[in-house]
Image (cartoon, rainbow, N blue to C red; front, side):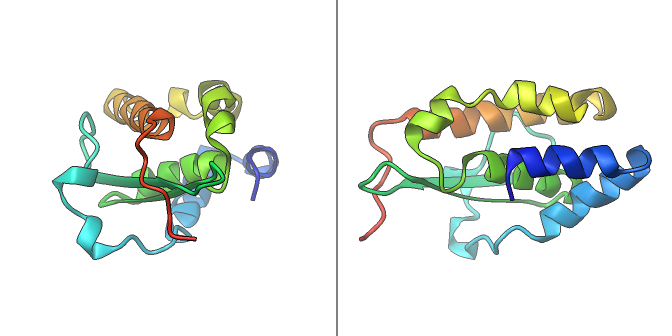
Length: 140
């Protein structure tokens, strides 16, 4: 799945209720998040829901993003973030304008202020982790 395909799928939804259902469906498709990483070290601050994010980087500079939340809507948002960053290069993560992509999906205008603030916190957290030079390389 690509950001472009998500944009096409969102535009095919008849209304925002259908888009929310699609967002929840995307969240259900997230790979299982390791229970041993549902701890404070991976918890994103600034979210009303509990959100855990783990990013690792291969020796080739390719990111692996894993995430989960206790909220189905937030899991859907995490799925979108995963589509934007998982299996992408660190350089892509630095360049990709995820805010513009979310604007094109018209998401923020349909989220509560708390969810919007949480989404921004998640994006900031992911971009910070992706940019860190000491991200743990995955075993090859």
